Amino acid sequence: MSKKTFRGRVILPGEVSGTATVSRQPFNTTGSYFENMLAGRRDSAPCTDSNNPELFHKELAGMILCTPTTVGSTMGGMVLMGMKQIGVGPQALLFSQPIDTLAAAGVILAEVWKDIRIVTIDMLGDEFLETVEMGDPITIHEDGTVEVG
Image 1 (cartoon, rainbow, N blue to C red):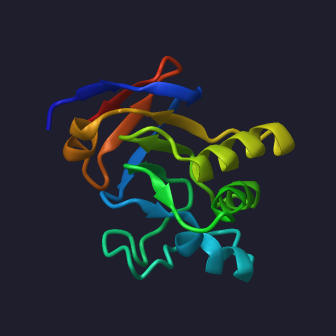
Image 2: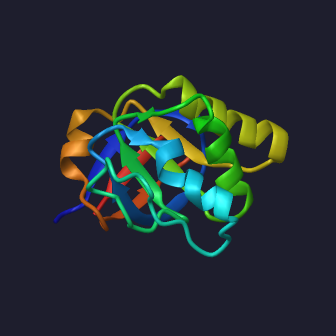
């Protein structure tokens, strides 16, 4: 695959490189992380959302999540912040659609309350989510440019 570039809206800027973790369905933050948080895991975070066949049992620690949006309970934002605080949360969130209120609350509160940055870009478009595949190399730039491949 040749490198493809997308540009989105910067919610929280940063320079991050890693591999894509892709959920083409909305990512249920609470369902995916909550059991890990209760278990106090600090070395891994396997996805515990059995309703997400793309990610169920796959490692979520340190991921660059590529998804249309997040869904779940109002705890979702706090779960994002908590998982990042204990060291197994996402490096970055990349949304094809506008960021939802659950994810926005989590990344903004992590930044303000805990001085923890989860690089977040939204509005990358449907083509982004149609292009990116699980395990693709991803590079995120401060200006909201995302390189896939």
